[in-house]
Amino acid sequence: MLSMRIDTLPHTSWEWHNGRWCSGRSWIAPYDHPALDTWSVHDSQRTIFQVRERLPGQQAHAPGGPRPVSKRAYDQALAEATAWAGAHHLIEISPQGITLRTGARCPAPVYLAVRQAALHAHWDITQLRDSTTDQNLDPIGTARLLALTGHYSTRTAWAGIRLLTEQSTACFHDGELTVDLPEASRHDQARELAPTSRVLDGYETLLDAVLADLHYLPERTAIELSGGMDSSNVAMSLARRHGAALVSGALLQEGAAGAQQQRRREAMIRYAGFRDTLLRAADYLPMDPRHASSSPLGPHEEIYIAGHSTLLAKWHADGMLWSATGVGGDEMLSLPPEPRSPLAKSSLPPWLTDAAFEALQDQEAGVPPAPPISDSTLRAMACGAPMYLRAGLWPLYPLADVTLWRFGQWLPFSWRRNKRLARARLQRLGFPPEVAHPLLRENFQDVLHEALHRFAPQGLHRLLSEGSPLLEVGYLNADELAAAAERIEAQRMRDTDAKVVHVLRLHQALI
Image (cartoon, rainbow, N blue to C red; front, side, top):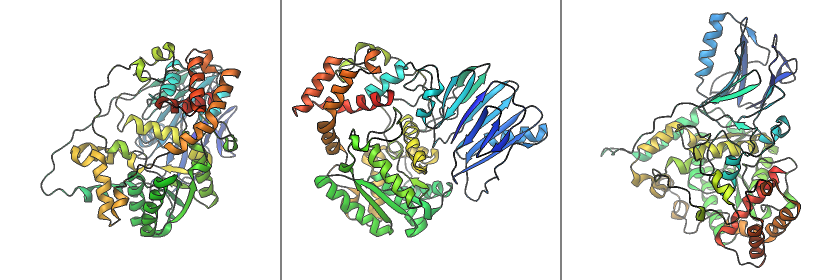
């Protein structure tokens, strides 16, 4: 939602200039999008800046410098800003230092780094690489990425860059940065349904209420309609609210699963009247140098970003400014997790070394205590948002709303298992059985295997011959990577060999 550079020198006055607040060498730049609102006030010693998600019916403030107010009015403004119901970042500058708070909704991340007594922040982690003198890898953050055991955490791949997680507060004083995590949120248990319970009605009503609380323009909103249960339910609720005012799009799979995906999507598009954009996933293979990004990509971003970014760019060129997703639906209907067992070395890819395994032992490092929604949903939002923001679109995550999350926790397991709730809702809308209960799994497995055979061996050979930060810190076994490259070339892949794509993605982000 914002980027900034603030030093520790006294800030006597702030002005609005060229889309940012400025004071000497310090500046704060809100992300420029109609989804957001910005405002600021100051009293004799303190200044507040807030960048926040607009709420329906709320008029945006006119851009400008901090407005002078009394001490009492300032305290009231600070209390109101902290209680803002939408996503927000709140910066306060006072004689005690600089604080940056983030709200409970986190559609866009903010990463922090310190260099030469200045605090730098950005929603795109790649923009902070040059802002930190500490280019060392964070052992735990890096090992988690390699082992695919990621957490929603303050830790990133770099020791000098931190993520400000939801409801956390960063404090910067005398060149030192500290981050205070929130208290654990209360989680609920499954409940017994009353005989008169109307579960589907409740789900539809809550989803409609969540959408009503989001600010967006229907005629400038696109829907990611892959055909999965989550995005499909979001799409159908948006269609019921706005008719054919929206557009949809997806990446199409290959083979029989792709044909099934196309039939299922066409049934929903006919129902809703969406204007659709469809791209073949096989035309945007991971690791294909023809689709390499023109700008650096962060180590936490998805491996199918080439096709996804292309779809977003097409939408933006067509005038779209918002993108609605189904992120959070899996976790909303998930069953309670099993108690976490100790991580076994045998469960990791063979190319991870003992040093990487050792770094994975601290499972709680930097992890907020029990956030209000799931760890994996918050991580998916933080990892995915930079892709949307680079494309000029603001992401909407209705299924990540805490109200729907609590509803999912209350549901008996029979309504959560195999996403019965989401499937039953599509059935009730009258779609063919294949829409709610497809026979074939629709995923990117075939696309990934094609990419591995075509591009992974040469990528691994180049990594081994030219070197990598991951080899330098001793997290990768070169012999095991070479063996994996040979197996992929000979089309004798083991199940774990597909995970080399994550090694190559992380390596590319670090060099």
